[in-house]
Length: 295
Image 1 (cartoon, rainbow, N blue to C red):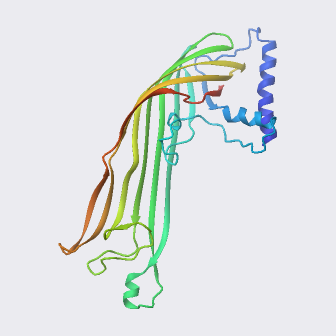
Image 2 (spheres, rainbow, N blue to C red):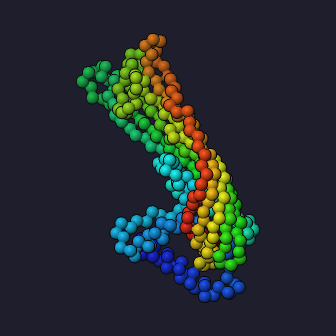
Image 3 (cartoon, rainbow, N blue to C red):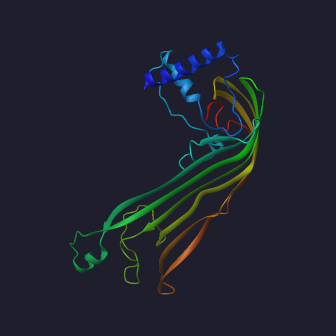
């Protein structure tokens, strides 16, 4: 892995040095043109890794190359729900103006299974060791999206890049419970293997909108790109973003036996009315130090 990383850096630097020697040649096109498409990634992990190779750092790790979604910059975002990386892409409409996008996505579904005593079998045979299965399914969804454009200033190998865009993000965590033992008027307290799923005689069926939030706003950016080789650039950029966060109501659905009514009932309890927040600040959407490859 170290050899591969060193070869990448060496190739980029060599290309930059060689291109600097013949930069005056008219047949070499360094900057993007109308119709070009680009992908990019945050290069900070790459340069940090290479730098640590030469400073004696024995705990050097390479965390991968990818874009940075704007939702990763504030610690109140839930890291296990929101995407940690994103895809960066650009398309040149003209020689100076490009469309740009930064997209992050995380969809995760996990089912934990637990054994519980088979109440029906125990009713027939108190010594029965039969089991049923309870299932707790946890669904996590996170989206980070920026769509916008940018204007590029300069015809030579160093260009100023000024962008704007619309921001949107959402995150949600939900849980669903499925039990092997039915709750009935005869079996009012069925056995379950899921710890903490029963409260005051009611067992949880659904826990919805835990940490559910939506974010929408605008961003502007200013940066510079240096083309170390034809259609390969290293850039730095800073963003000023303003967006509004609003959270959904968090609630649970549960079932239990109502002795007063003499039947099993389902009820919904609101746990949180939902939060509101406004954020205005600078950040590094896409990457504080990034590399872009044009095709």
